[in-house]
Structure formats: C-alpha cells, structure tokens
Length: 361
Image (cartoon, rainbow, N blue to C red; front, side, top):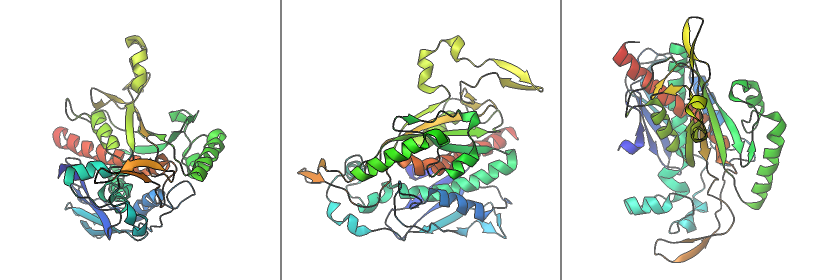
C-alpha cells in the first residue's frame, strides 16, 4: 500500500510492528556503485535509539541493522536494498490489560475504525519504533547526497514547551549539539529545559517541542511544479512522522503579518552566482530549490503516553479510566531529531534522482 512507502525514484517501504520479532525497510532506486559506510549508518541509528538519557524511553534496544540484499563488496548493486533490525527490549505485559481500551492521543481508535483489528502491543504499526529503519534509509540517502553534491543536513531541538533557543539557524554550532543531551544549541537555556523535563517526568506528564532543520549546498533546481513541489514533499514526509502536528518553511505562518516588500527575497549576484539577499522563503520558491539554505521547522505534540489518569472508552463503548504504564519519552521531539534529518535526506535524494533523470544533471 502507498501508505507504507515514501518516494518515487528513491523509494523506501517500511515494514514491521513495535513488539513484533523485527522491523525493517526495503530501499529501491539506489544508484549502483555507491560505497556505503555502514559504520556511519550505525552512528545515525545510535542517535535515535531509546535509553540514551532520563528524558526518553528507557526501552533497551541495540538497534543493530543487517543488510540482507542490494550490497556487494561494500557497494550498492542497483537492486533493492533490504535491511532488518531485531526487536529485543519490548515488554508485552505492559499492554495486556489495555487491548480493548483506546489510549487518548494515540491511533488506537482510528486503526480500529479503519481495519477492525489492531496490534495493541506498543501501538503496533503506529509506533514510533518504525522510525528506526527510516533512519537507516535516510543514512543511505545522506551518503549519496553528500558524495554527489556535498549536501549537509543539520536538525536540532529549537524549542521545548515555551523555552526557545535564542541561537539563530546560521550560528548553530554542531559541537554544542554533540555535547547536549537534548540536541539543543543554546547552552544558556538548556538547564531551563532539563529542569522542566525533570519536573514533568516526576509528575508522569509530557511536553511538546519544535525541531528545526537546516540544509546547505542544495543546488538550485530540485523540485517539480504543481504536485511534486519540494516543500510539499518535505511537509508530507514530516507530517507523516509520529506526533507531528505542524510544519512551516522560511517565514512560515509569520508571512501573514508581512507585506510583499517585507516578505520577498530580492536577488543579487555574489561571486558570479545568483543568490537572494535574504532567505525568507526558506530556500524554496515555486516548489523548487533556489540554491539558498533550506530551513524549516516541525512541531511535535506532547507524548500521549503519560502515567496520569485519563478518561476514555473501550471497544464496546463503555467509559473507562486509564493510566498508561511503560517506558515513554517526556518530550518526543528530542529523539525525533535524527528522524527529521533522515526523512529530509530521503526526500532530497528522491528529488535529486528525479532531477537528474529529467535534466541530466
């Protein structure tokens, strides 16, 4: 089904469930002869996996991936790449008494309404556990983009609750992000966030956040008109990610307060290259990249799994009260940073291959 896949030329299909024996992905359209650095792919997975600090799920997963096909002598063959990750750290007993109850904020009711049956262990197919193979696919796409165009993708937590970083996008230091347990670029305000997260964890509650992503060295010309716009595909990918409720690029919703003069990006020439003097459009105009950095933000709702009591109903329409047990993120945006980067790489790689196929570049 189309809902299990993303991309046209570079197509990724994800399979598996949260508490099943394994999860994985099939990646089609990867060009042949690409020498993959498997260590770097594993490093990306390690950034996403649970149990890294006290603010994220304590579920213990090694998240070691295995390539089953599409690779020979360390290089891609041009045939489908299949990857698998074994599930090991799940606890089915945390869900035994919740099979017939709809958890507030989750996809339990809607999956039941659509299919008439659902895997209720950890949310089954709707679980964020399925983002692990997405990160593997994104790491592969990233290596293609880096080798072909030197494209750099950097995401980070911009805001948690009402606490926002004061560091602008062109001043974010990757070294600071590496030292931060929450991928936050503002050292001065990080303690405020960790204090907030500690307080929420103690109360069994959660909070939302914003992830910002900056992509540099994207050539002008990626994207297609009308129904294949680059920003539309980025938005679709991000909103398809678990817990995402908002997406904006460039000035985003702030543009409604601005006049045309204030919102337009004027053109100029620097070192013989046409550029814009500002970047209010976020690097994309008319659905096509203009060569400036692509900048967008993704809003994540608070993790719906909380240990506070909530009212709900069961599959028979009877009123119930629920208190969710298990290991859950206090702020899901923190662990979503590498997933945002992965999905960005997948979309950009897809558009790069589509552009190359049509325009020969």
